[in-house]
Length: 520
Image (tube, rainbow, N blue to C red):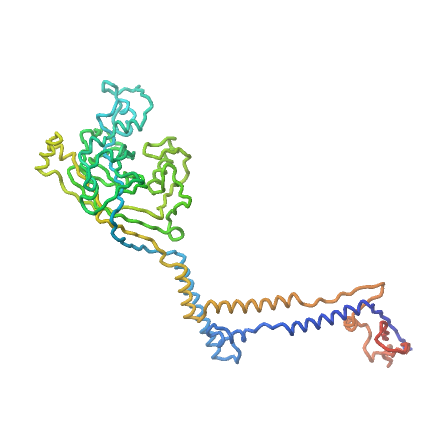
């Protein structure tokens, strides 16, 4: 007996609205997709790009041997360009520099440098007291003694004043200086300033940077000429060797700028008695490059003293500060020639970079023997000495400018950013025929393709959800078609020929309302 099953499914009114909305959204998306410009494909971009060879390798057209050869040529040129660009970048990162020397034009006047001189013997033997010998035993090597000239184990003296000892026992310039002339004018010991160094009490000519003496001509007779008596009879006897024992006789001289303190024990040169020494100078103005090309120290923008105890930074001042800090850590004191600023010592190695702007003086030294036979007798009568004393103690120092010109030596960057960009542009044009605008074209195409893909991901339509209203299952039409349990036509129960029967209970009237019957 055939059985007819009638299924009734109610579609809520709210289901029609999402359907209409989905249809409207689909139409709007289609319209928007049709209205928006589609991104160019690679072939279209390659045919319009200004990159040489890209249109022939990737443009529209059939694939063949010719296109393969063009692609190989393009890749080879690109690899060659990248290799050259990497070499240029490595060369730029090494920060190469060169030194340019420019002689300056002659000037009517030139500032004369500071001249510091020290007697190699630091203490006069006749000026040392018993207390001085006791306190200076480690420096002089002389054994301490009592007033009878014998060494005593229990000697006690007041604490020493090193400044007083150096002032009293050092060689006095008024006794050593026999004659002095600067640019044809007479000078005296009052034109020298006292300065303390490792050699004790020393003297500097033209030390004040605010009132530096000018030199109006070059050559001999236009600079400083002095005659000195080194007073060898006052040299200390050598009882035993110490770190400060000296076997020389003469003076040490350093020529430097007024802003730089003397560092004469390392930067000075010796002048021997019995000779007239000529020192021809030339001013050199050096300019070094800061980081990353060099390691020079730039000047402070605030123009404040960068080292305690000194008005300006210099390598000599920095080294003296480092020595002071080392002594300060060891014995909590300082030597007389060190800066008078007892701050905390810094730990670790002391680094003294070269200032970016430096003035130094090149020197050419020559000498002749003095005195000759005639002048020896004259000088002996003049200074009430014998000729042997004149030959062993007298010397003449002549310091002058070779010419009133200065040399400017400047470090310059040998390969800067502009040179790097120019070389990269040349290599880019040679190998791939590209420019900055070509790179912008490629970046614009990549942006266009990426943005289009992102928009497609963001605007992908969502799958409608199944909802339930008042116990009545609401299904979409598409779901109903896909999930329909109705058997296919031609299937009969019990092998009969009956199939899907028409619904005879459907009321007459227009179809497609809210209620619709399905018969299985």
